[in-house]
Image (tube, rainbow, N blue to C red):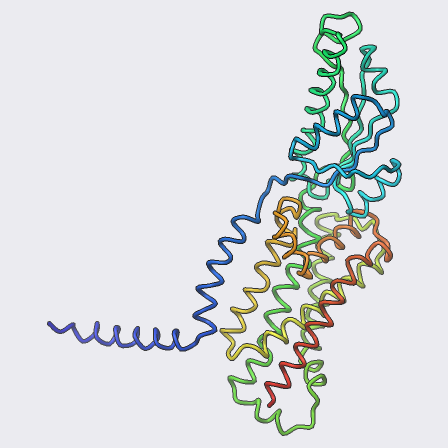
Amino acid sequence: MRLPMPLQRIFAIALKEALHMVRDRLTFISLLTVTIGYVIVFGYAINPDPRHISTLLVDHDKSEFSRLYRAALQQSNYLNIDPREMSAYQASDLLRRAKTSVVIEIPPDFTRNLMSGKPAQILVEADATDPVSLNGAISSTGEVARETAEHVLRRDGLSRDAPNVSAVGANIDVRVLRRFNPKGEQTFFIVPGLIGMILNVSLLVMTAMSITKEKERGSMEFLLVTPTEPWEMIIGKIIPNFFVGIAQVLIILGIAFFLFKMPLTGSPIALVCLLLLYGLTTLAVGILISTAAGSQMQAMQLSFFYFLPSILLSGFMFPYSGMPYWAQRIADVLPLTYFVRGSRGVFLKDFSLMDMWPHLWPIGLAFIVFTGLAIKGFKRTLN
């Protein structure tokens, strides 16, 4: 039984497209393997409720309670207690420089107040640039403190009915200071990373299309007869996109400052250096993709495969501290990870140019690597 002619024509066209898809190995393999890889990686890596958060404990009390409290916090799985001993000022500065996320300070009179029934205070400083992800960790500091204090009271024979102990048990007063974003504005968390994400998408795609359009239009042959060096061609390709990126940044910053009332507590020079270096690195990645892709469709797919992990693993949407160790190592090679940290630092944490340096040099290293690979790939394209 023969199929009707319209169905035969549809089947013939579908068979032709399927053959083209299979022959385009880069597209076909990437669609299958990358899809499987993304589901596995992101399924394990993305966690909105982070555990084992980096924490510093400043112990002025040096008591049995503080020793048990440290051990109990470590067992809670929410916090990862740093064993180093340091002053409150040093710990607070590490919090500002994003070297830790929580600082717990036990005052010197804690045990004395606890035993006498007075409010025994514990001071907690938390990095509130992400106002949601640390809620579980912050609440655990108070719960563990109360459980530990009541254990100490019971062990010392002080019952809840004793006159020097509160009728509701240990009188623990946990004072939480949410630094850098005390009002918990979600916009202040999103906007600094949003700048990098928009540049990552727009500059990458526009630049990735530049050389592939020459290939598809057949104008690459005209470039072959010119005396232009590969690095000159690359610079010429990225200059228009570079100015487009500057215009985008100015628009985003204008909206952030005037509409969302975004603060800029750090150095404007540090912000400019971060934006320029990250923009150039993104352009270099786009040139590298354009030399590797044979068509605009392939360039779009390779761009997507690059910026999707950047967006999901960089800390822009989901907390870096909530990822498993292997996923954090992947995030550590993504330029957007360092841009997000540096951008939030200069907007909210009073970053100077010196504070920005630990986030600038990895982006600069990525720029050198991607630019070298792009020049090498462009030479191969010309050949």
